[in-house]
Image (tube, rainbow, N blue to C red; front, side, top):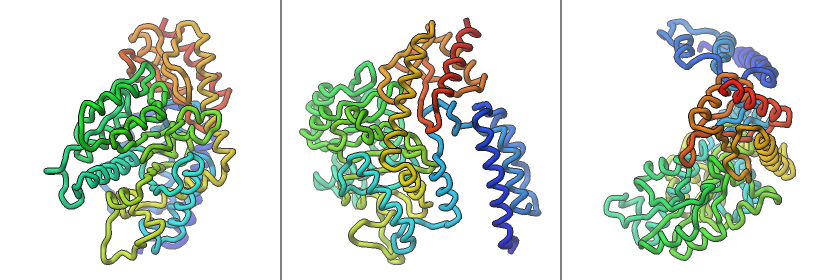
Length: 461
């Protein structure tokens, strides 16, 4: 054997020191990476050496040569996409998950991690006000959370019309309608492709991207057969929430299963001052979110919640003679997400929740929304800046006159490196997207962001 017991200690000591250096540097380092992927590949690639390198030296090499290609996504000045940082307890718990090395599919085999995930699931249902008897599964991210929920929806809606999709597949099955808002996230379309649905029926949305409930009701009335309706808690560009109190009853009147993609916005349900955004969301059948976003838990941190326990476990669970499985009660983790072998990704979620407490979660979520509102107010006072959306949660969409000018400002900001904001296109215009998701973002970070945009406007005048 090439490894002795001391190798663990030496390698972990080096990893800890390099990690400390990385975290210490975050407040002042540029957010953008300083090299390209091709350069990193050249450094780390080539022919695999015949002789191995001791583990501590591997860690030193990794830290030294990866650093130029790292994006400071944990920085309070990172406003790109919808990506959170990592709260301390979540990060440390994630290290322990790797050290424990538990294959967390079965309650019998890994009672510690299974029990911790079940506790985290109960806390999540309580925080978000979702049905307490629901199953909670821990997926890789919001995309797979949506996939898992929609697999359960497919199973139930076809079973309701007498078709066993597990036995018969989709060939010859009754057609299932899937209706989505015009501004849903593209990951929903991806999940629907994976599940064999093809393209969904698109329902009109308002000027902020929220689904039009009257248009949804009309679309449902225009056809027949089993249906799934996908709603959204938090539009990617505007942060807008679909009107659940109107849209869900419209769907239920036609026997539809309702799924809510709440990748970052579902967390508004934990905050009394923001709860109006998600009023009625608990009436749905399934929900998907990502704790890496608003809760700031390390990857992987997707969460799927399904009210219909039988549908979820029938759709994604498996049974084999060699596995010692529970046949009742909480169910095995492998029955709630489509994986048999996986890390205990719910443990860092538990650690983050336990370290924050209910009040801390509310302060975290409310604080991100308050920072976004403050940033919007300050930028609206800057000549040449257009805030295009109603800032109701954590997302801003900005324009700077023409598309050409907006692209130039975006390019300047990404090259400058003081902050990171990503470009996009929304409602026929090029925009600069700003997502306030990181737990550490504060007024000082907003000062830097405002100044960076002012400098970009001056440089591109």
